[in-house]
Length: 167
Image 1 (cartoon, rainbow, N blue to C red):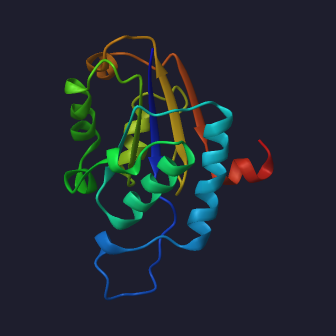
Image 2: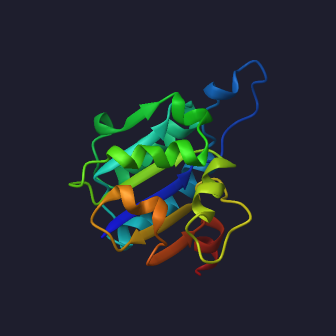
């Protein structure tokens, strides 16, 4: 069984118009919403073997928050500028060489790519993965390279808004 957790970065600041998009920091409300997601992931006993993140400041900060909350070493986060602009297909290519010893991988990045990626596997597609939103996909396979060819055997979409409602 392989588990892929797709997480959109937390809400970020647009206050400083002089900052490049890549350098926008998180807002406090984004951190708060991410803590809701962390609590839910802890309830589900999610323990990533690998966290992959875009190098954009808001994505990497979100990945670091998630790592801390899930007892994952921040130093082990795999970050790349390539993930900042990657397509869903390019992100999926990461899984062809993924070590089989990893059973749970978390991917932190941006829309619209993460919505497109999620919808490749969700039986009920989503319109938009909101900031701090997470999609948990479980696959009945022992090899990561099978992901592009199979449907998820279990899926869950978690949003801060739903958690606030108690859904």
